Image 1 (cartoon, rainbow, N blue to C red):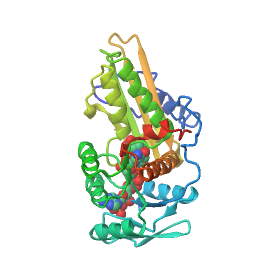
Image 2 (image 1 turned 90 degrees about the vertical axis):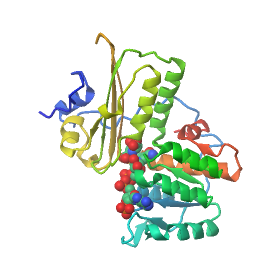
Image 3 (image 1 turned 180 degrees about the horizontal axis):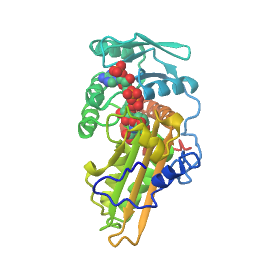
Image 4 (image 1 turned 120 degrees about the vertical axis):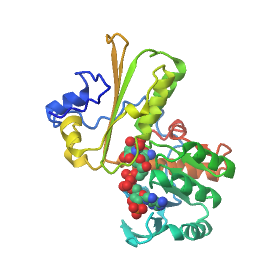
Amino acid sequence: MLSLRPPHTTFPRTSPWLRWGRLGGAAAPHCLSAAAPALAPETAAGPGSVSFPILVNGCTGNMGLSVAEAAVHRGLHLVPVSFSSREKVKRTIQVEQTDIRIYGPSAREDVLSSVADEFPDVIVVDYTAPDSVNSNAELYCKLGLPFVMGTTGGNQQLLYKSVQDSKNYALISPQMGKQVVAFLAIMRIFAEQFPGAFSGYHLEVLESHQASKKDTSGTAKDVIASFEKLGVPYDMNRMVKIRDPDQQLEMVGVPKEHIEGHAFHLYHLTSPDDSVSFEFQHNVCGRSIYAEGTIDAAIFLHRKVQSKDCKRIYSMEDVLREGYMP
Ligand SMILES: NC(=O)C1=CN([C@@H]2O[C@H](COP(=O)(O)OP(=O)(O)OC[C@H]3O[C@@H](n4cnc5c(N)ncnc54)[C@H](OP(=O)(O)O)[C@@H]3O)[C@@H](O)[C@H]2O)C=CC1
Ligand SMILES: O=C(O)C1=N[C@H](C(=O)O)C[C@H](O)C1
């Protein structure tokens, strides 16, 4: 049997992922999202009916395409251009009735500049690659294009600084799934309310994503930051990152049809004497939870820009707090 136990961990036998692995996956509750707190229903500030231009950068990729499709379904005006990291790339992608023209890096600034002139109220959404985060953000800021950054990784400090210095508008979040965002918020509040509550405990973290994912889960990093405030130091190098489809099927219990698009996270805490353990998990199959959350984020940001709100940099928690839940 496959074992995911990394060299330095004492992962308990009761780990749900191992249990699900033994069950062969089929009977397991695969797609449970993190339990969300009961938040306010949609209010006047919530999504409602609105339309504005949206440019999705990274339409050649999985998230870019999902967001572009969700944008059309939600009645937004999809700007028919997107970008690639390659100069020589398939030139158009069809999203519903719209043909999206794909440009290479050398045309990026000219094309975006024309978009800014032609669609002054456009919102840009970025789902590209970790190594593009900072250069893309700098360009959006230079051209005054408000953006939703869904792409993870890059230099996050520099990302925030670019937005602050330019006084541009941006919503930045490594996690757009609203129920998962609520879970992250709970962990943050938990840590603020009870700092050091888990001092001495030992933390193990496992995350499983499609093999094409390049970086470590940004969501896991966020949860770990809360655990650290709760008194549990964690070396990121110890995180178990599962990208192998066979392990995902047999051990993690990812349904076959979601091997190419899933995000399973498991955090396990053990007390110093092993007498107490806690487990938190959030398992997402597919990408619709992120695509829908991204459209809510874009609508939220559009409203902030239109009202000339002074905060300018937002998180997904800000979106939830304004009634965009569920
Ligand atoms: N915030 C959230 O909730 C979520 C965040 N993500 C994050 O989104 C990012 C993308 O994920 P995913 O769609 O699965 O990845 P994919 O690899 O499927 O797609 C990324 C796409 O970005 C394109 N790309 C790379 N560099 C550039 C660039 N400089 N300019 C324009 N396009 C570029 C690539 O196309 P090409 O090869 O043509 O350049 C590729 O098609 C990752 O960082 C991931 O972690 C994913 C899911 C949810
Ligand atoms: O690449 C993905 O797929 C995902 N990336 C985000 C992350 O790194 O946290 C969010 C989710 O895990 C899916």
